[in-house]
Image (cartoon, rainbow, N blue to C red):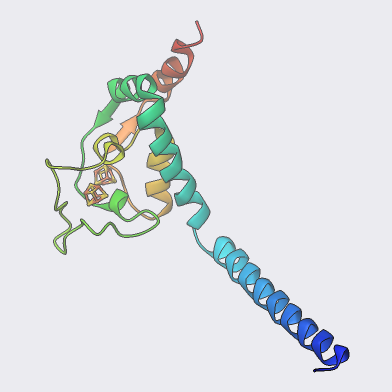
Length: 141
Ligand code: SF4
Ligand code: SF4
C-alpha cells in the first residue's frame, strides 16, 4: 500500500499539469483573438445564419435596396476560412446547385460589406445609407 503523502503529491502534480494546460489554452485563444479576425468573422457568420433563417423579411427588404453587382472576387468565400467549395480558379463549385442561403444573399447589409473591406476585399454591392435607414425603420412604424 502506498503512503498517503505519495498519493497526495501525485494528485497535486496532476492538478498543476491541468492548470498549466488550461493556462496555455487560454493564452493561445486570447492571443489568436487579439491578432486575428476570428471573432469578427465568427460573429458575422452567426449573424447571417440567424438573419437568413429567422429574419427573412429583413433580408428581403435589404435585397430590395441593395445595388451593384457581384464582381465574383470570392472575398466572401474566404471569411473565417476558405470555403472548400471554392475552386482554384476562384469559382464556386456548387454555384446554382446547393449554395447555402447565406451565400445566395451575401451581402445582407453594410456590415457584411465592411467585413469584406476589412479583409482587403472590395465587394461590388453597396447599400445606400438613406435607403438602409428607411428599411431599418420600416418595421417600427
Ligand atoms: S459555397 Fe460557394 S459561394 Fe458559398 S462560400 Fe463556398 S464557394 Fe463561396
Ligand atoms: S465579396 Fe461581394 S463582389 Fe465579391 S464575390 Fe462576394 S458578393 Fe461578390
